[in-house]
Amino acid sequence: MRFLMLNWRDPKNPLAGGAERVTEGYLAALRERGHEVFWFTNTFPGASPEDEISGIRIVRAGFKGTSVIAAWKWYRRQPRFDLVIDQHHGIPWYAPWWCKTNCIAYLHEVLGPIWDVFYRWPTSAIGRYQECVTHWLYRNVQFWTASATTKAILESHGVRRVKLIPYGVHTVALPALDPKPLTPPIRLIMVSRLAPNKRVEHGILALAELLKRGIDATLTIVGGGEMEPACRQLAHQLHLTDRVIFAGRLPEEEKDKRLAQAHLLLHASLREGWGLNVIEANAMGTPAVVYPVAGLTESTLHEQTGLVSAAETPESLADAVQRCVGNPDMYESFRRAAWERAKSFHWSKVLPVACDWLEQQATGGR
Image (cartoon, rainbow, N blue to C red):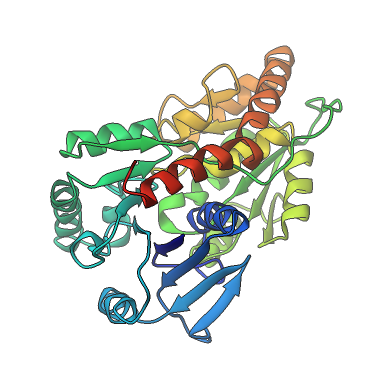
């Protein structure tokens, strides 16, 4: 069968993140099953118009605002696809109205308040409004997501069919948990694209609050992005340059090593489809402290595999870290429960179910 994914970014795009890693995982698995798999995406400076990643044929054309038309023009010249996957990131590809084949919508999260972070009013208000209208227009299209919260929001916007499939991770859980006592300095880590909606600066502010309370700690930030200069400036202003380590983008093996070394993962995002790096950290025996936002409250089970802070503030994040530091037995129970749970989210468990369902959709849901 022939599958087509429509997504604004591909894994080589400088702005690629967890959504693209997950997408690659699903498509690569379909390719391994013998299917033809294509990924149409926006181009970016220095990008080749065609590429291949993990056996997936990448086609790049158009930019923000023009790539939908570019996709339609390219699509008309192709043999028939069995399934088109219209991946939404705030704005869809409107594929159900031009692909003339089986089509589903794939969504990581409903952006909602994220529009306010990237755009000023009235653009942000228009963005939020059109997102709701889009979901209503797509109400009869089969949706696919990983988050129960996202599913509930879609249904509140009128969507009638939403398939829930949890994300998978490539990270293989440690074969055994080595001791990791909470001896100072407490090693905190954040793994994220440094974008405004990820609020990495809240982790730096939480570190400052912990130090003010007499808790010896450090923070490693893995990832890069447009907010890195501002985060570095904040660390400098707070006299934390010797406490905050900017590790940049790291290969998977090195990232896993840093996650295993850390005591706690911090996640302060405004909203997530799931929080992929939470499970990756858990697989390395590192529980998470996260904000009480959509997605993160599902990837971290409060008081079971980690802690969900009481509020979306650096002080509240620091409170949760301090609670773990003050209760080593509780921390150790989080470690073990998180590690055990992470095993169930490995791709080997998730992909067979997901691929079976996608193949079913490619035959019209029969």
